Image 1: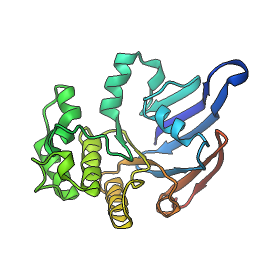
Image 2 (image 1 turned 120 degrees about the vertical axis):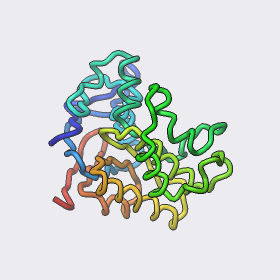
Image 3 (image 1 turned 180 degrees about the vertical axis):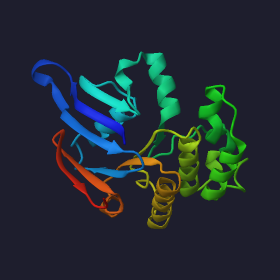
Length: 227
């Protein structure tokens, strides 16, 4: 079953002679439970692609379907709600709210939706992430690796259709990088959580089920590593 479907996706910045085509007619699908890595050189369009998959920016043309919903057929309010419920975003620099505790940062997406926290799911996530003794800490009281664990927990709180990670280890040392990727792989397998990772790190890409290479705004290669 395809949980993510991208059809003829293009993004152009500017107009006329100064127009820059960041994405050029990109199409591919991702199966539910698949771990897909998207790689490419700087300026290739992979970050633009992530923003469009995450509902952060709107395409010039084309469609992004997440669990059969055309994201860009939604208005801004509908899109914000859909993004919060169905897309778990993990950033290189964590994007935690500094005045909120670990527990508050993790549960924020549900509280914004006026949804009750599933205490069992929360407890299981906290245990898996090794954050049991950090729930009352603020982000500035945590290491980089711990902050990224909180970011992963926040992304998983609403059981999203897809989880998108933008260079999730780019701000971490090699030890923490390995631990974060191991956690993402674990959730991918144990929760059948669809995972799309944008990365420069070839070591991460080689652990994925599939690697899509973006060059000059187009899909240059799409290779299945683990069927």
